[in-house]
Image (cartoon, rainbow, N blue to C red; front, top):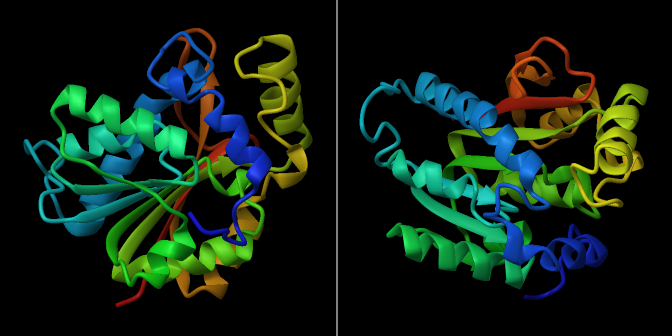
Length: 246
């Protein structure tokens, strides 16, 4: 894969080294496995509401082309494929794509995985109804170039859903010190607090690319139930929906 301005080789190497563990619910990606039900429910509901689909139908996303950019091992790609979307998963790590492809084959799922950057897909003229941009922007080298490519990939009238971490002291205490150094939920060095982004900053970057934020929510860990759930508290984890006007 050719070099892209948004790709950080150090970040790619870090995730590549852990690629074999993507589907281990007790491995280094355990927090994502715990987080997945909350974000999947939000993604499904937002897409179905936006496109006027019945979320209770067997394949409510049928006929929609979806890109999961920075797909990792495919933890979101597979549920989206089961909901009927035509899924393309792209990642800068060759090892991640290998792990994702192998798991999809084992599950009998037809997912188009590509070792590619957002910029390369945009240059190829790819277009999508839906783009999932989940826990990626805090790991890229150039936010502007990355979001410009993502906006180019989104069809007019399409929707992008983003999930990331807020740059607050609370996020530093919980997502970096707590999750990495105290609880050991994530390998140390997974996150650089300086690369976290506030909802206001992210909204402004999206607006500069012609994308309008239509909804946002926090996601908080519920200690009593050991589950993640949508929350008005956006101080740590949050998700945004943005649309490209037709």
